[in-house]
Image (cartoon, rainbow, N blue to C red; front, top):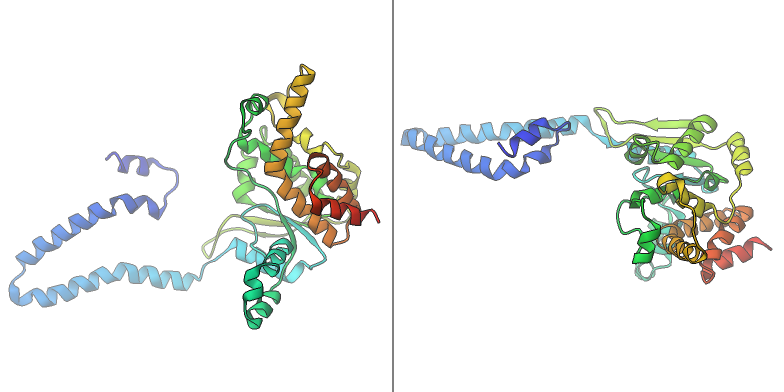
Length: 334
């Protein structure tokens, strides 16, 4: 009863809920079989055993035939297939997590430059190099981990949860130069459920719905599983509006301030200001720097020099020793 009541009252039902009671059911079933066999005359036991085995095979056989008949696929697979036919290597794609699973330019470069690739056979190398790849940048998604690593940092992140860090990834200025955006209900649904809290994400989705063209949407049904994936195209109108927004060097600090309760707290003293800035820099290095590096690398690969310069300047202000980003910036000013 202690296990069954919560399951019966749950709003969602999954097969895995039955796993804890499988051992109990097995014990009860085996006890029943032993009792039944003892009641059957010895001469009829072989026939009875065959009938019992046939009955036991019916449920899994039905499930197997149903699975084959349905031939289920996923929304993520359908989204990837759509991209294979519509997104070119010269396009920049930005995706939420749990969207289409594609080979990105960054991942491809890491594999090609690895020792494992160089040790592989020529056939294996050619097979990998023949795979479709995209200038695709996944939007960051922070779901766990400490906000700050010390007492001072904790004092300056008071009122924030780790999930509040996600708002920075949804700064509209980051869409400048992006051709396609894919959202996933697995992420979008969570943020849209609390729009008052996740304001940056709300503005991001509103901008897409109002200014971008919804080219494709893949939702689950009897033959398709997975979160709804929407694919938007940011055409000339959207790009013109994004270009007017701009992206200054403190864009991510403003996003952090908005994530704090009440939209940020006034800095009381100079010492307080220095401590807070150091805490913000530490957060940037841990959570945002990998995303910004990836975005810079893809803009550079596509020849978007102005975007590279803008992002690199804000990044190098926090991490001046980042050689790859410095080289990207240098190549974008000449």
